[in-house]
Image (cartoon, rainbow, N blue to C red):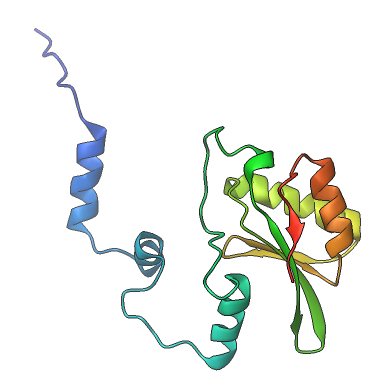
Length: 149
């Protein structure tokens, strides 16, 4: 006779496995947005973090996958900042999923013919391109995008 297979609750099983092993540093960072050991940042790292979060006012790490965050409702801020002798254009406040942010960044890098990166949820492009980026975002339907001081 064949035995009936028991119903397995995979969520519960995953919880047990997670409890049995220690968390990796990246997982600790994702859970709390900070490392549990709370290292003191160097002056340069602190300055960059302050730039990316606009002094703690903007959270770009937030991701929504639901349709309630349509492009019109997103309050995207475009800032131009200096990094030594270089200029960087940053887009903050986007709540798109990670893959969509990467695709948007790639399109903009191609359009502008420059480099860029996605750091801590903030899209950074090399050079001063705030006007071009604002026009591009408006054409994509991001009517809430604006240039910030």
